[in-house]
Amino acid sequence: MTVAEKIKLIIRDEGYKQYVVAKKAGMSAKQFNALLNGRKTFTVDYLPQICIAINKTPSEVLGFNEIRS
Image 1: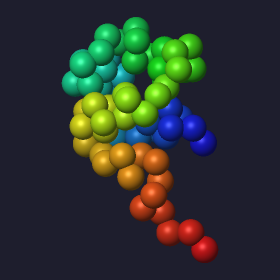
Image 2: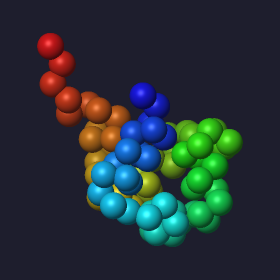
Image 3: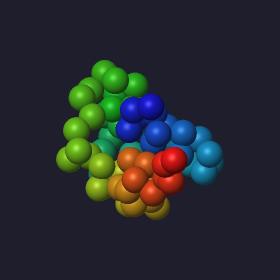
């Protein structure tokens, strides 16, 4: 699963609206949608501001907190 897919899943599960997350992350709804849908390259530079907007840590989004066996 890509980072964008994980973020989309979090947004859906938490009941957020994409345009609200985009605004909190300091970007337009169009730019945010392009990031989530692969029309714009998702770089690590976007992660901190998106994480703040969805109230998650980068580790949570990237899955570093998951227990692997």
